[in-house]
Length: 419
Image 1 (spheres, helix red, strand yellow):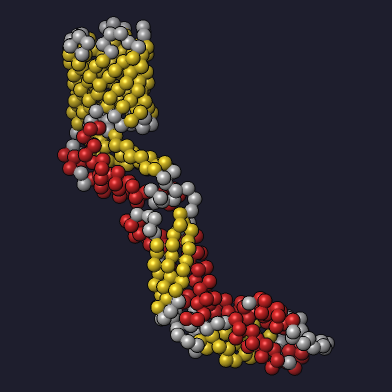
Image 2 (cartoon, helix red, strand yellow):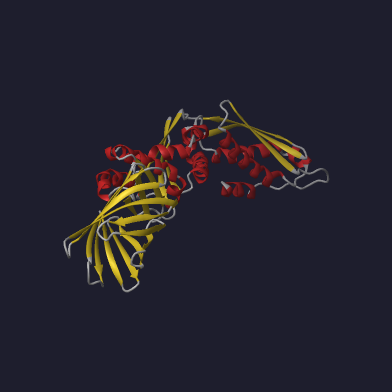
């Protein structure tokens, strides 16, 4: 358009200036039987203002008045070439320090009556469409406001306004995606919007099911459904998942809550999502009724009793207290140890208490402190023999941990199978 303006103004004969008032400003108005959409009308007005400024600003008012018919003809010729889909019916210039240019246009050909917006998210999970549409708000309505009423032939240039509207809305409401638009003009105009993730996307999703109160093996039945649900995150921008963490957390909770074991064991579910290229999802499932665990130990660097198994069965007697017994089996000498006890939760991640070894006829003081999801510090003291044992445990997998054990006389590495 600027090329057309420049060319026509270049061949326009410049008349001599006369002393007197000059044109300082140009004011444009556009009228039509069917008024163009507001943003399109603004674009038309801006275009005419640009032409008017280049053509009239600085000229004398007398010059504009004398050559008004020629100026009006020039404006008509420029916009008959530029405003495809419209014919310029009349141009009226009112000379003055602020010169007015009133342009009357009329559409020709077919008019756009309705607009549809198709969102292509073929690379994303179909369940996310409602969430994405919710983020986008009334984008279809706002695009329709730009296009409905326009001549079909004007979409070639007015479509740029629609694309600007969509991109502005997406930058504000869906900043984690870039957009690609294809407009198919017609009485029914179709816009195909392709969303392309911007920034880092999630490549892998790792799901961990964990519990301190029931054996992990009881959670395995719920694992397939949860892994399938968690798979919806793959291919999403990391920032999008971070912004909608509550939504995805609720989706995982809904799937987990439907599993029969949740009601059977009175489980309280607490999911945690850590978005990233490798996203980590941890679902902690704890019961308010019992605490049951089963583990097998293999000690490396220890000569005696280097393999063992332990069953812990406890009844929670309150929000902080537990009565329990532990049954230990030592395969080396085929012996059993029975140890009833009591535990108390001092803080959210710290428990301690006392056990009594029936076979050794002595008490054992113990303290466990959890550091994050994977680390645990353990301490035991036997007053009868003045024996101290300290352990640092790290969870390698939902079913396997490694612990370094330090005692008064020897140290060793222990592998712990958490069943």
